[in-house]
Length: 360
Image 1 (tube, rainbow, N blue to C red):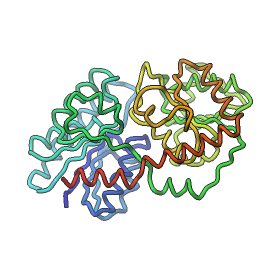
Image 2: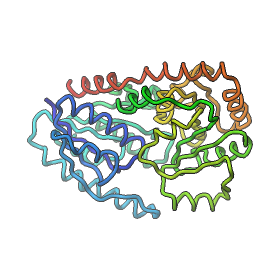
Image 3: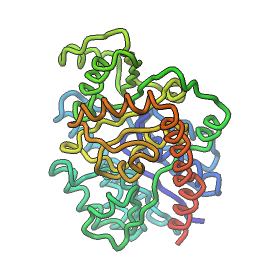
Image 4: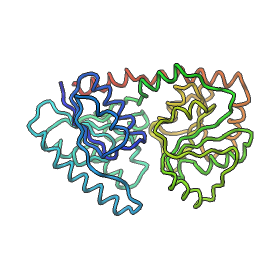
């Protein structure tokens, strides 16, 4: 069976390592031997009890100084480029590159004539020159590219070896959704976000001020210290119906409290390639409001399991929140359809498709 040599730059609890953990766990259960090369800490460390996984760690973290961050990044690329040659004489080896960032081992893999498979999560063409360069290199180096949405694949110039395999959630999360009951009368609006202005944090706060009759719950994937600094910088005041949480290892309890989930990413500044929080919400049977473009928009049928509204139309979002949470029949229909449509993103289907791809 093919040995997987997997590279992921930064092992934390954000979307791409969480998806990678799900993928690797599925492959480990199928009997693959996997060598994982990533930074210390994070979601991927939860796989260490598998006997057929071996982890190679290095220290890596972001810095407030972008020059320092880039120097650390280039050092990791050099280290992993050299490390990769330990598998030079191994047969049936596939280099599995998660995200665009581990370009060093991808380059080494192609030099050695090994198969290089990219799991592409970003929308590089909406970012700066650095990511566009990495995307160009991916298309030159990759034997196969796994895209998470049709939107993402359509933006590639070289589509021949690109296949769309949407993300899924872990079987544990799906089981928890089946056995837990959600309190539907609490009228709570939830958003999970990184600490970026283009993610719509300020607009979420504005909605909480406009709609004092509802409870607004914001979970930010960052430290409490950085969140407080952000709030001070942007004059965000806490008020009775706004609840703000820092980075959480387990977000399931927040979905249990929610009635509706928002994604307010500004499509003029970023186009989401997929919506993991949207899938988590739908699996829980919660309606969603998302932007009108990007891979995330592919997950929502307008008026069926939620609505597609851009963050610039805050008045319309406000009206839709009111409509969803005040019309019981509409709300029930949206919840049922959200649950039903979430079944299109099957864990078994995702693992089987990746297994088939790696086995070819």
